[in-house]
Image (tube, rainbow, N blue to C red; front, side, top):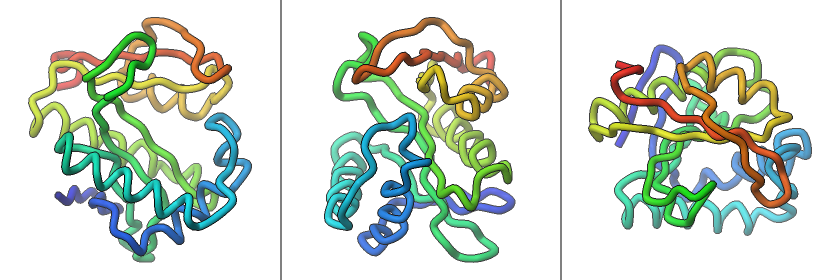
Length: 173
């Protein structure tokens, strides 16, 4: 699977992507609202293997985001199937994204998220896509609202206060 936008390519993770994944996930600023930064490249290798397994088992998973201009993996975006309950929801599609700080503020998260939503609603025929973000993560909450998500609640996830969002197919398309 490959999704192309004006500036980005979203594709399935490949084993060598672990180096850029580690660069991103070991950064305390990236992980500020997400948990403890990873401390070894092996953790990033395992994360990629887990995502690759999701492709096989669920037919969907987060995608590596490649900047066309540089050819670099600059983060990830995409949908995943929630197989464990989050805010009481399970077996639903969840939108997520994460980027290396050097690529923040360039509109890449919005561009990749929109491409992911297009795929979810147009190719997967989803009726609803969910997302959540730490209540203190102003950037992520702004993006979700700008994409048309409606904040429908709040909950606690691993000790963090999070906002829960929903986007209905008919509102998006």
